[in-house]
Image (cartoon, rainbow, N blue to C red; front, side):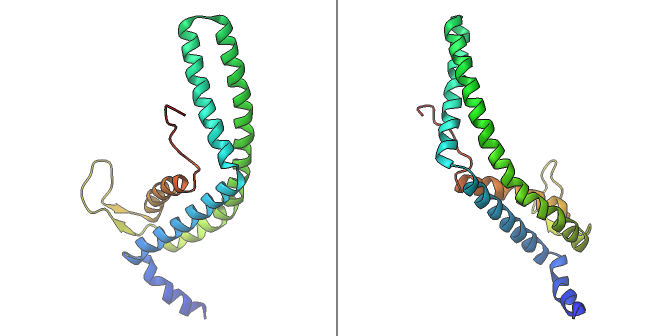
Length: 165
């Protein structure tokens, strides 16, 4: 029985199926991570803290330029308050990351053994510092970083702070 399964999965060891399989694995893991991240923190509170922190940094810079010690002390106190709140939020997010990391530590060696050092993807053109051929590890990292960036934005885990906010 295992012999039949091994034959069916062997098509995923070489491009283009390996390329798509790793992209799919990366997409599934990035989606799972983003969903856990979005559910483990209060996104509105996180956004409020980030905006307040940005304003506090700006206030600290302005007060330092002005040289007004009273204003500097007030800005420092505000930054300390926000830092404590952000630390609590970060701890909550880190706990959810551990829920993802432990299973991945078990799955990663299996995937590494399955794909080995075979070439699983080809870069379509020559570009400085980017290889023309990707191993499992290289292709997974490229997919993972790309997809995590997009999915974190879609799930509201990262955002840009408008100067007016």
